[in-house]
Amino acid sequence: MLPATQVTAKELLPVYDRPVIQFAIDEAIEAGAERIIVVVSDTKPAIREFLGDVAIASTERGTARKGVAQAAPEIVYVTQDEPTGLGHAILCCKGLTLPGPFGIILPDDIIMGCGSLAEMAENYQFGHMIAAMKVPDHETCRYGIFALDGAATDISIPVSGMVEKPPQGTAPSSLAAVGRYILQPMIFDVLGHTPKGTGGELQLTDAIAIAAHSVQLTAFRFSGTRYDCGSHDGLLAASIARQAAVRAVRVNASLSMEHPSARPVKNGRSHSAKPARSITEPALHAS
Image (cartoon, rainbow, N blue to C red; front, top):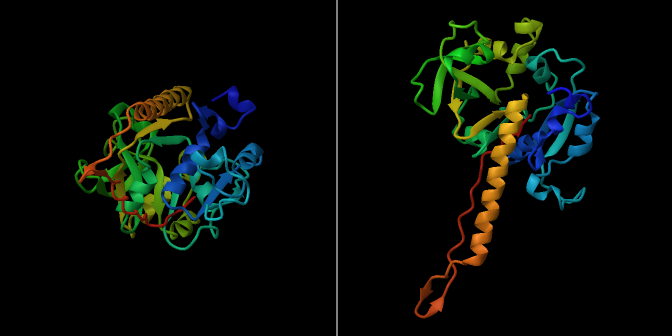
């Protein structure tokens, strides 16, 4: 994302009307996060300044004041001194996650539509779960690719393992891992004994593949659309999609004001519809 990222953290680059990292915060809140751990470099102090210590949804950020949202998830920061792989970034969170399975969001991957982590939490049962999408065969060398144990047409697919960025023509499938995970805490111990992998970095994919020998691994096909905002084209595509979504909401709101729906009439009197029943999401601690 150079040269813009020489002066601005890529996580704060705008996607039409909000920065990249705000999408991750919104998704974590929607999934029911109680604590959000942000792994960050000391070279990006603006991220801390923007987020603060309490997670604020994008719909509330313009009006929220510090200390008002008492029920909002807390934000905890941990510093990764050098970029030595996603596995190392997750290992930095050891001892900070709340008890039980925890979620991971990679902010570069924006998923629009239904919140992917909330979808995963709703379908999660046990073991490790990773968001997945089908990619063209010639692009499999750019992703972590699943070795399938079930039908690729299912939403939740049992898998036997993963291969990080397999050489062209050697991929075990065309189903690729995307930056959303639900992992068991045991992954921290596995990461502590995982050798460095691709690029000389500690790869989360390698640790998950090792853990798959003892813990069930599931690939989850999310319903939203993923945009890689770590590239110029991906950031532009995400901005165009976000613009279209915002304009659609504005148009619908305008039409509703111009043509308000008539209230149902019974015995000559109008009456309001019954309120919708509340929906409770399972709690998930997103990192």
